[in-house]
Image (cartoon, rainbow, N blue to C red; front, side, top):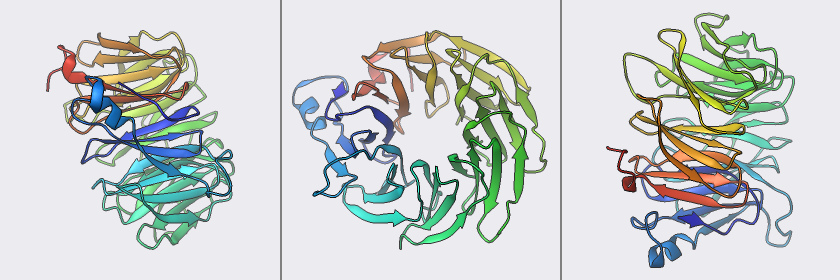
Length: 357
């Protein structure tokens, strides 16, 4: 089903980990909370109408009008009780599950591109165009520490554990920082162009990074040099994601402007599969919770769900705009996608016979 209401392109979507509420963030200066009933993704009627009446989270004052305050990043805490959003006004905001504004966090001097909760939910991490990262006390809204090591905009951040994290930048650098330390605990240098995304593996042992230099790299805090250089893409790599599944092989997915997704066997240090089916840059990949399926979204307007074991397409959905981001719900029976034509689409995977859980 299509969730309509945003009046500008939708950049981010994320399911609440404990409920059927979907959050979306848009260039219309709002985030929205959609309560998607059990039958809504598969049918229209009253269920679809209920889902189409979202809670509106305004990122502007009532007297100002919407202005240009894109909501560029958002994330639920692990309990699903709070939603954090980041926007072009440089503020992070914390909202209740019911969409009530709890805190406005002010310290940055430029747009936010990444915001992450640590697992306990006591700290929130934000990265900004102002070149800094900030760790916030989520209860008080007070900045605990602001880190200013980057020489250019901070593009992505990711917690390693409850008190340490990594950040990457257009300055080609990655810093691993920790509360209690005034200097980075590790510096990773090796990319030749802007770094677009970073992600710790499920154990917090390995960090994946991807760059405009056409490469992805895998790092360990035990060494300043990359453990693996992943070279096979022919254009910029926009994002990377680790498989959540615990297997004998550790799998990493990378999505590139060369229109492909590659699955890397990090344990063996090789490209295991190339998923070729898109016609334009791939902006998003998302693993199903059991790690058996991977969804990819492209500016060719297509969402493709792949069987990881066989490398074959399970399902293709075509929308009416480029795909910015994808999100599976915790049960793995719903897949959400957001598009450049202002739409959010929810797909019910229980209707897809090849998908089994």
